[in-house]
Image 1 (tube, rainbow, N blue to C red):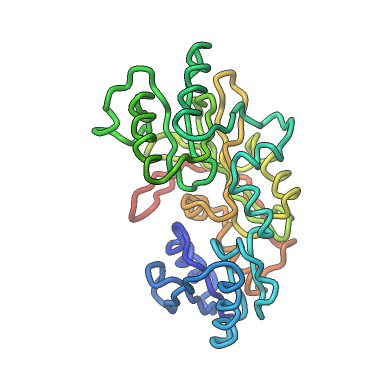
Image 2 (image 1 turned 90 degrees about the vertical axis):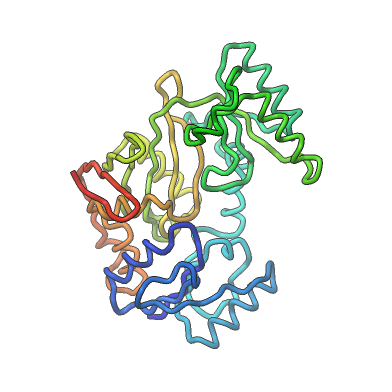
Length: 324
């Protein structure tokens, strides 16, 4: 099978594991994300209907049998002459990518966090002041953004420690608003979400779905910067499966949760794409990437997917994972 994988975050290690699971796969992917044994293919630079037409032309010209899109899944791909394995419909992807719209869609779901959408630095400053007056710790993030882009915990007296240690993502509230106003002078105001800081721990649920049917899940609990505990049957996994069914998700997706200061789990977001950390779930024995490769090639049926009932602690580095 000739499978075209659109470039995406951490697609290289995912592609490597797919090829290891199904050597018969002929993978085509971005030049910067091409593993040994695959063919580099540059994604057309276009949008909307023009992008869909260029994808269709590429599929026909190269005899591609299946397409696994990421950003391109935002446009209608119904006329592409191959099987398209998008995570959801364009409308569904737009819904979960817009964190404010997604929270509205959740309604009175008990996993929904307390957050509010505001516009720009002025809106963040006012909402931060309101929450600070009530003794609440606040964080802020853009309504639309991935991979932690723009996410900060706002501190009353944070100074500029973030310049020496940006990893905690903590910043003085005054510095954040001042920087935001500088950016707004040229780029305009952005839609932002302000919410209570959730102390955690954080859990990322890697989920393999087949046209809205959850098949395999692995919950990764962050222990520290170099360790994650990976298990099945976590409390939030039941909630994640239900959301996947309601949204009709397909392929490898990720959902993030954190504990609030009362000990209740809250959902942060759904990513309609694989998280980079799903390779840790794979290497811990949950087989999400392996099963996906076999489903795509027809070597496995959805009912044959096996949910591992186990727990592992993964110690990881940039080069390899070690199972403790």
